[in-house]
Image (cartoon, rainbow over all chains, first blue to last red; front, top):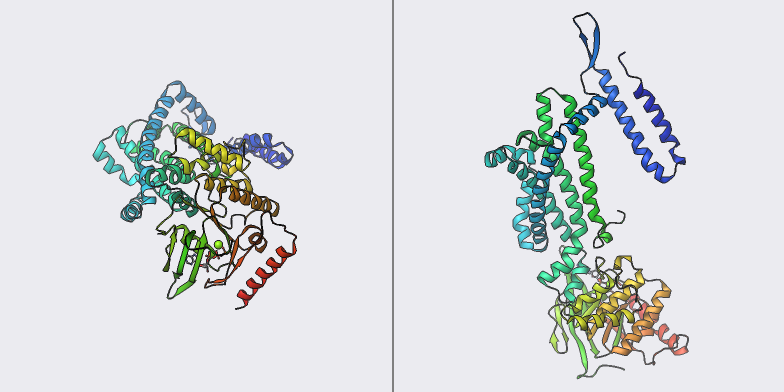
Length: 288
Length: 256
Ligand SMILES: Nc1ncnc2c1ncn2[C@@H]1O[C@H](COP(=O)(O)OP(=O)(O)OP(=O)(O)O)[C@@H](O)[C@H]1O
Ligand SMILES: [Mg+2]
């Protein structure tokens, strides 16, 4: 049979559940609604696979219908294989490591640079055109240069992640300083705060909520760029899994890696969102 | 208390004018303002919205430069903000990222630890916020936050406090309590206070003298001494008469 039946049943059940969920308790809603939406997505995926099948004629004359695209189930099976043969762990660690180093460097450099640009009018005038000119260049455009410079090595990918995160962090940091209500700066000046004290007690804490938002944005971009970087500039990591599996015609593995990228992205965003709960910045986020 | 004599005058404003540059022309906000405030005096600045009260206060505080004229405090020209004269901003000057304790500590950061802690304790007690020392100011009510602003200013023992409608954002009950509070603190510490308001009742209850400003360009239209001892009898005929007089002055300056 060409079409599987379960996607239709699943969509029907999920729809009924979503309509009926009004009566559920909040906790139940939080759990069930995303699951229902996920079920519909997976059903659509299966349906899409069923739409495009080809006929395989065996030597004994029987005809079998095979999918062109990997189905959800094939992806799950392949993911299991990736777990047992160790690729998943090894390559996840490789990707995470590169993002950690590249993003970490961007934080260490980007926040001080951004704060300096935000506070010093002359630094801003000098650097802003440069920053704004470099910012729109996709990090992917830097790949050839990165390889030329660092070779097909970790350093290439780390450099690309660094670039991808640096500009959002710098821009976010100086915008944060520019939008500090002047009353805080005036109060601080009134109490004799200058230079380092002003930075430590007012400029930095006042900008921190917006800086954290910029970090969150930058980490999201970094996680997207790691795939492109690893597809071309190195030979390990989840991005590399995708190119490698495609070359080996293992599309289930391509999808498995994509699922991992999504799940890890959610995890990273959750992790960095925890910064918003710090006592020092809660005032800047109306609802965490 | 009447007019300040030459030797105990604290704040002296002479021939002050302020013009804000606009496209094409300039906006004259203050014109020929002369004002002398004695040490330990409580002066209310009363005037219609937009007449330049905040501008005048900001110039005295050293946050803005006058176009013409001069401001001297203790005989020395004002060149910038200074911890000896503290500004209390209308609402948001208290740092939301810091606790009540740390907000008050900000002006005391160079003191030895023991002395600093003792002072902070004293001022927390003074504003009745014991038990809230570690609370972040973003989690306080508007009235509590305003009390922190006042405590933070008092803690550095300034000799001049400039308050720009410090009670404007509060509900009427809290306003009333805060007025009593400010009077109590002033009677205790005897600093010089310049207090901006557009509430006639507030000015009559608090001030030694009420300075009435005219609409833009802001000039000093009248100076009304309030010669009544504290605590003032808010229902007394003298009190009502002064309020009527100030209302009249305000509406006359409006009509001109
Ligand atoms: N930085 C500025 N640049 C240009 N114009 C300004 C500036 N600050 C104030 N003004 C103008 O100066 C005038 C007086 O402003 P100011 O804030 O001193 O009034 P105010 O008496 O404090 O009024 P309110 O009671 O409403 O607070 C207003 O017309 C305002 O538009
Ligand atoms: Mg004002």
